[in-house]
Image 1 (cartoon, one colour):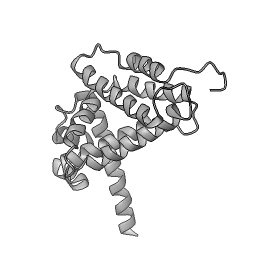
Image 2: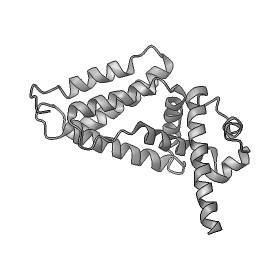
Image 3: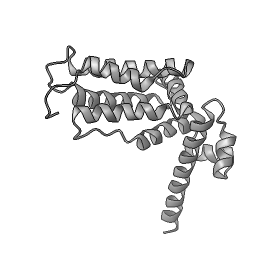
Image 4: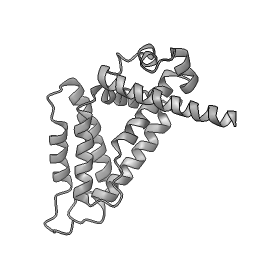
Length: 194
């Protein structure tokens, strides 16, 4: 029984660390969020962080997973219009957490190495995102010039590219541009049943 309570406390502490790291990185940025700062917010030592996550890269990978949970982009059962709106809302939210956008972009590059702790995260996330986009925006609509998988890849590429442009120039209107791109790639139907 002690072991079970100990496990529950460990899980709760891990969640607390992730929530704190999400906040610190979102506010201070990826480069300015040291293990020491994150540990101080939670009230543990940097060594304790590594006890729970093994490495800084693993901690940051789990922070991105936690961010994905918070974003809650699960468009199952949504119409294509609702799915577009949900996707744009996530992009709009990203403009409020530049540190997390920078973390995502930097880890995405590092994760090209199959040995990197975030490699599997990015493969899985990309696959889920493309499947969702393909299902919700590609569907069987014949008014799109692209097949659903290609459409999903183009949308993902544009979204990732806009994030890079926005990090260099915060005046880039990511949600506005992405909305226009979605309308161009997947024009709204005139049907009221969508």
